[in-house]
Image (cartoon, rainbow, N blue to C red; front, side, top):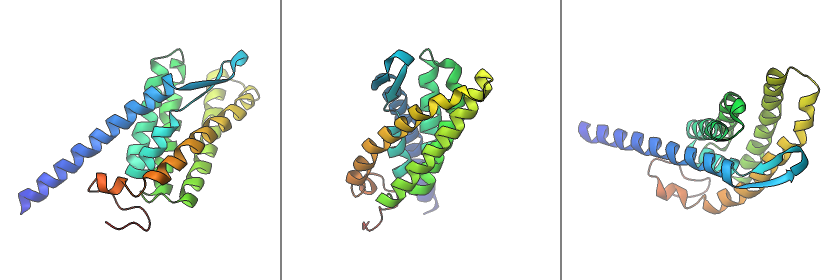
Length: 186
């Protein structure tokens, strides 16, 4: 019996590593390649890297959300002209993924997802404001980034929340160690 428990825990660890890797890659790729220019004259874009990040955090928890978000977005920064932002993205987006997963708690309901999206919005605004102050040494100029940060999180939430709601009864059956969505049976 004991060896079966060890085999189960190893299988669970392998699944967690695989989930982190897949969602980290998806976050990186969605950030780099799925973009909509919003303020082309100022270089402003909305990327969709938050979509796989929110899905990962909602279904697979705060650790997966933190790794997928922080590492995925930092990799995207390192692979594009935004490399200076990689440390900021690693920390801020890692915290965003952790908090989104903490609030959704693998039981994504509409109120939890809306609260998680709002919390992540506040983290994004504060975190990137502080990052910009550190990188550029100016307290006023980073305020210009706030509307873009709001748009970024709003776009991610508008796309990911309906997807999460649609998937929530299917996902617990896909991963044996996930807790079922609120109201779903195992």
